[in-house]
Image (cartoon, rainbow, N blue to C red; front, side):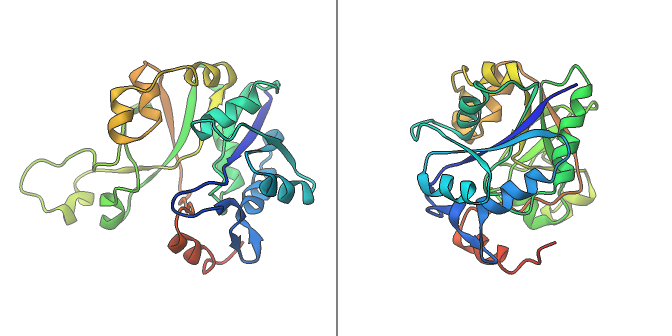
Length: 247
């Protein structure tokens, strides 16, 4: 039987929204929303919050959840996930960001299920871009995929570029565009390998960690989903989150 666990990295420091894991959404801290939704997935033998801050740990412990303290100087959420995964036996590790309060548990189950394909090392969800504003927002990441669903490239730019005299507002009618959702699943040994890699030129240019993995020859399977990600990164995102209906 394949054992899968979900690890939720939750760092207190945030440039755009300090202390955001504890930000309240409909009266409940965001990290609690993420944790409780992850626990509804059917595929996990364990769900663990990996944090660098006692207040976040205390919030999860108060609801009977599992939490592990990690080094505050770890360079990324992936490194925080790997630090916890090293002491846990599991075949598949899901890295669920602590700023996805509306995550659909079914999507997490879908990510775990793709690993029945032994060729898949890393998986991440993508969805179709459906409006022009989303297509050009540099805060969102686009991806181009091969015919088997593996990511060819991730970018903050609009890819692919539509050549010719086609107005940008009409690009969606000319081609399919895919938006990346920043959730990852890995085979355990692959997670350990990619955390040992040095950043490359592509990552340094676009500030996208997954480009490091591609540049070193790893393949990333992109699972197409209808789930529309709503991550909370700014005070404006938090305001919108509190306007959304729950359930």
